[in-house]
Length: 471
Ligand code: TRP
Ligand code: ZN
Image (cartoon, rainbow, N blue to C red; front, top):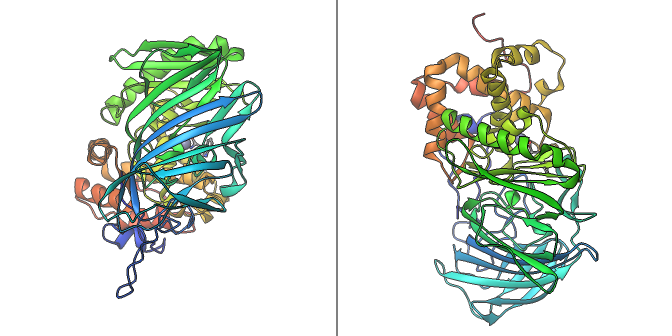
């Protein structure tokens, strides 16, 4: 849906002074003859192989069937895209799995595999601006990603009774061929077939009642708002499901593994309450339903899957639910253009935890800030959160120093500018892609202040910033 990634900027200067980020997918050297080969990466300087250049995906139509006993996934993925250049070949990202057939606009296409790239050569050249549909038939036992970005395992993880599917930052390619980078968002249709008795959970809403035939049930889900590939899921297993409506009228879907049966009602109630509250703070909720999933796979972490955050093997306390639901605005509706801007997700979601504590009388954001600031030896002072590192993407600095950045900003411009700024931010970029530079520019516009020094000290310097003015 969106265009390519931003050009790289040196972290200590770039974000603050550079003009807006716009850059083409697959930059072409001036004067060089125009290549008709789609680039194998979308242009993220820190994840050069992630995503692909030369086209922009509009929609994924995923037909999937999963058999937990054999761990075999079979899929047929149709990807509707628009060419951003003439293409005689282009890539999709796919990790493992065996491709049996590829067609482009119904005609046979040849294909090749090289590492995590599926290279496709359509029968005839696709012209710049032309819409096309590529269908990939594939099957195999999915293998999750590990160790990349210091994360342990992520992607499609098989469990005793199904699968736990959490893909940030680049694990969507473990279960479907995709342009696996957040700068290319698209809408999704899922039709997921699993053995009768299991539930398959994806994003958005169900488009009909599940259909059972010959011992297998098909669940159809649709996410009609643009979504980053890392937020897609097809979590499967034995689940207890409940649906409801929040006080403000938003549909809620929650599912918990049998062993978390006791948390089902609470997850439904808290999810509705917190989603409604955030809509008064951050602006209208961006999607058509809210929810949550507790699986019994003991990941120990949660992920903000669009419309349905997932909690891996624990019953979340309200602060964690508040964090994941805040991501529906910061990360899911407003999506980063390149991974080094991750503080726009995690700093905001962590700050949301502090706001939730403030709202529920469990301590102020100011006290959370001061507690962290007091520790001069914290390693986060050496890690500038405005430049999240590929080898330590989810470092504590991105979360905590990112949140402190927002608090320093709030203290500098006051609540009467800070909260309107947050709402203007979510409103201006709803369903889109964002950069740190855009946030800084908006903060300066709304506050009428020069904030370059503040953001530079908090986001881009490898040392503890000076204390905030005032008490
Ligand atoms: N974004 C998650 C959070 O802070 C953390 C996370 C990063 C994650 N990568 C993941 C969770 C992969 C699950 C799988 O809420
Ligand atoms: Zn988070």
